[in-house]
Amino acid sequence: MYQHMRAWVLSSFLWIAIVHGKIVTETSLDLSTGKLKSAVFKSPAFILGPGQVQNKWFYGIDFPKGHIALKSFNAEVVNENGKSVPLSETYLHHWLVARFYYKKPITEEQTKPKTNRLSSSNYILVGNDGICQGQTLPQNFGIGSETRHTRTFIPNPYGIIVGDPNKLPEGYEESWLLNVHAIDTRGVVNTRGCTECKCDLYNVTEDANHHPLRKNYIGGLDCCYDGTQCQLKEGVQGKKRKLYLKYTVYWMDWEKSIVPVKIYILDVTYNGEQSGCQVEYDVPQCSAASHSPGDCVDIREANMVIPQGGDVIYAVAHQHIGGVGSALYGQDGREICTSLPLYGEGREPGNETGYVVGMSTCYPVPGSVQIHGGETLKLQSKYNKESSHTGVMGLFYLLVAAPA
Image 1 (spheres, one colour):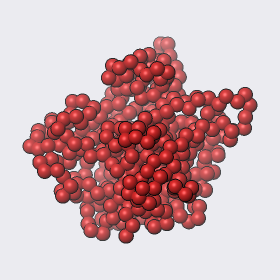
Image 2 (spheres, rainbow, N blue to C red):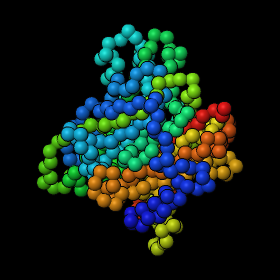
Image 3 (cartoon, rainbow, N blue to C red):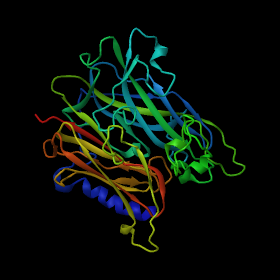
Image 4 (spheres, helix red, strand yellow):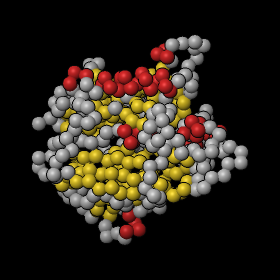
């Protein structure tokens, strides 16, 4: 099934890179500027044995300092020797990085809250400009298994402006948090079931906050929280491993010529309310006894209003295994961006068979694709449903700059 799906998606992946000259190829972006800086960091270590889950939040992580324009952030899971770890051993469900402000004077230890929520008045979660605010989707950057082959670079003269002293609330300083959700699938009885967080494989009846699972909830984030264990094959004994999320950041020192962008993170589960983003959903299996591949596709759609418009600078979707693409349309039906998954076909890190190892990105020529303030956009997410899927995502990252 995945070989067929890969062939179809890859052909579309290559086509979308050149259509009408509006979307540049992945290799044609100019990174050769003396003003561009970069650094490679590692998260705090996390330990995983066969079938175990890591889903911690790390506060006060290493990050570039000062008033800067972020240009790119990407990451991957590595072992203690710095070697890339394949998705077939440790599945990177997702990672995300977000800003928060903390009140000063404050000790270094106080920059690292003891819970997964910034609930104290000492902390302010900055978030983004997207539809799903608050604690739901607060990130500036964040993707998942596709991280090694998904472009995140923001072309000149644009950037995500952070560290602006004029934006800091009085008495606060800026810091960053990182969430890493990784699932060790070595020796498990059902690899895909573990990556899709099927509740019966984790033997849980409560979520991370000890609340009973919702009725008919059969898989998703509430069943594969930090510290849970996916079912192993009988007799499996494997060593625990020390792992890290290695992340690479590109940035430029702020200057007046840099054009700031707004970050809109859209969710196909959005139901029209401020707290209406469920983040994940299930895909039922196709009921037809016989069908052609194109007939057995689950299509999910949601409409949402963008508060402030501008030029679309960058766009990309986030999908899980089974995804066959996502698209964003304007109120008049025009296509803003189509983002397609790339499936691996080997064993080495970044090319793991059956896994989503990349998502195509949209880089419209500046000024060629615009969104109007107050415009209603339609987000569409498609998944193959030859088999059922639990806990899938249909997110869309959109960077918009006010026109000159």
